[in-house]
Structures are given as structure tokens and as C-alpha cells.
Image 1 (cartoon, rainbow, N blue to C red):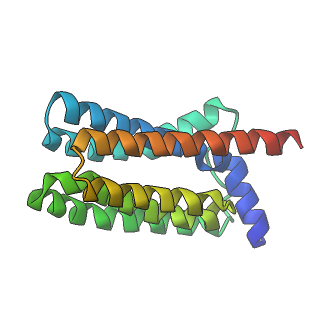
Image 2 (image 1 turned 30 degrees about the vertical axis):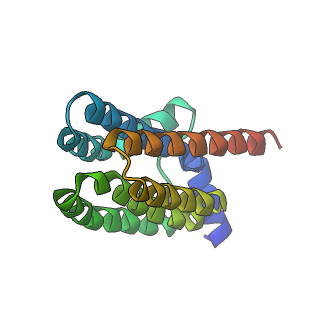
Length: 179
């Protein structure tokens, strides 16, 4: 399988990653409501708990949208998808430690982590929009930390950015399917 074929398989199997990004946006949204209505600590737990469901919910959304939600077994990019998930999991304790020092930094730190992860999605899906998405998430994290934004504001910002990029990726995928 060539690199182009592997990326095409990932785009077709996972609808260019948009359903997973929508599931992630939902996790951020739920965390925002927990931060607003309960406490920042409960919002951290909500994001961690919601994060565990991003892939399964993304796969369900893929299937609901007529895609398999599973790449070909011989696709070499499957290893990269697993490896960057490992990197994400290794960063979670760092973000949690940051929250113990200053709760206002947790969600901005997570925006940096998620933004960095999305940079590798360019290689997974062959879409430059993931470079832009990663940069926007990191910049949002920087601004939110610099302006000492409340946790609910930062969580809602993460949700909004991911929902906007997921929508753009879905539109692109729809246009590509029509061509």
C-alpha cells in the first residue's frame, strides 16, 4: 500500500477524521457545562471520561454516515494512529499536574496537547487542514492561559474550535465525494 493509498483508506474509513473530531467537541462541551454548573475539578474528570468515548463514538458516527469506521488491516498508518493516541495518554498526567498547580491552566494545556496531536493527522489523512487546526488549538490555548480565562470558557472554546474544523472537514469530504 502506497502512502497515498493509505491516506485515502483512512479518509474513506473515518470520513477524514471529522466524526472523531465531533465526538471530541462533544466531550469538550460536556466538560464546559460541568465547569460552569458544577466545578472545574469535575470538568477535568468529565473531559477525561468523555475522552475515553471519543473513538467509539467517532466510529459509531462513521457508521451512521455510511463509512466503516475501521481502516484496512494492511494500512501502515494504523500504527501511527495508535502511537499518537499513546502520546496523548502520556500527556494527560502532565495536564492534570498543571491543574493541581493552577486550575486555570488545565484546559489551555489540553488544547496544546490536542493541537499537537492533530498535527500528526495531516500524515494520517493527507489533509493540511489538520496543521491549521493544530495551530489554532495551540494558539487558543495560549490566549486562554494568557488572559486567565475561566475553565468553562476554555472548555467551550475547545469545543467550538473542534466543531468548526469538523464541519469544514465534513464539507470538504462531501465535495470530494461529489467530484
